[in-house]
Length: 115
Image (tube, rainbow, N blue to C red; front, top):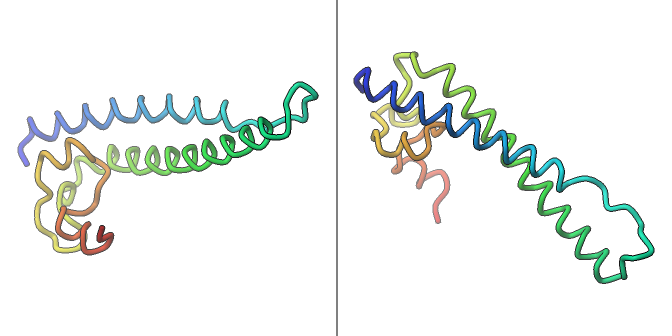
């Protein structure tokens, strides 16, 4: 990977970090406890609790992705950045633009998570 491509990926990572941070903040607001309220009926309260659970799961996934993106940003100048940790082949540039935090090429990722 040449310097221009690394700089482009660095910029993508920075943009994705900002985007995920916004998602984390939103999901944190949506994951607040559902307080008992006389105005909520039983069904509405159950829906609110269900939505809270979905938002909590999304919050956790967003935090994990943020952590992986931040690690990728720190590792971008490492000579091993952009190489699959499984087969040690270069990860295609287009894949890194889409998922800069990925440690796997498409082939190895499919072997690990088929489907």
